[in-house]
Length: 316
Image 1 (cartoon, rainbow, N blue to C red):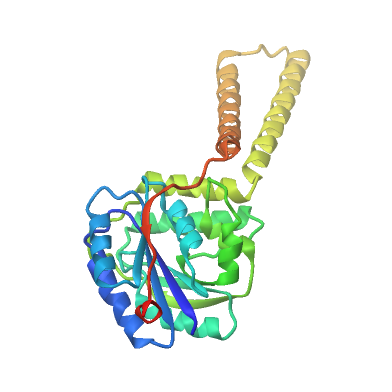
Image 2: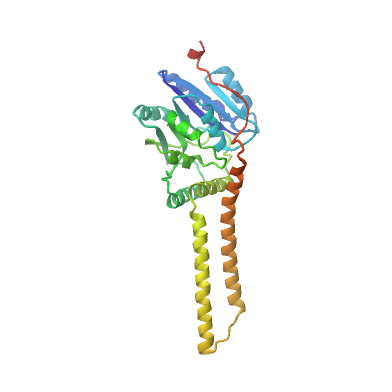
């Protein structure tokens, strides 16, 4: 009998977890041809999430948990799930039920058909703010343009991965992680299914504008050096424009005796070149920061405590 593991990162999700448990338990009980293991990854929650998780585990041993020593971020929490998952395939989903468990049987059908990575593409983004939706779609288009890897639009972390994909992801231990790009980087046989994203039932998202902006910068700097090349091209164009303008001023002065007016021209040139230099330094700084963090070779996460999920049939 094949084993299906479900990884659910949790951060301040005490209100959503009972609803999530009920929805997943329904799916588990309807598909007894598999053994099920659910791993709840407590990512340093500040509310009673860990207590709720322990309560769920005490009532249903199929729900295990891994509690990190602090908040390391969703990317690190997912890696912890990859490391502790023992199933023949792994389903990754959110705890807020925006990823409906009812889609999991469709994923399993495609996995049984021979696909290694069954990813769910959103046809509707639920009650998401319009501005956030615009920025998200624009970001995916930008990432697709600048990256050599085919980054999928409207596709998040909701997917099923075969064990061979999990083994590949376990080998990618960088601390500055962008897992959505890693899914594409590792390759393997992929299959798309469509789903309608639900709206959050309880609580609120821990991702605000700045955290999403930080994540987008991680995505761009993780998979392309194009920003560095843009800064190089910008420097070359600035130098070329400055040289052409110098020749123009020199010719006007020699041929027409046109006096050099000075102040406005100097200010415009200085501001333009200064802005270009600061932009280039900022881009270089982003890449240097990544090198700095990776050079420390610290573990991506630390575990405070964990309990393995146990299938009652196996336990007996």
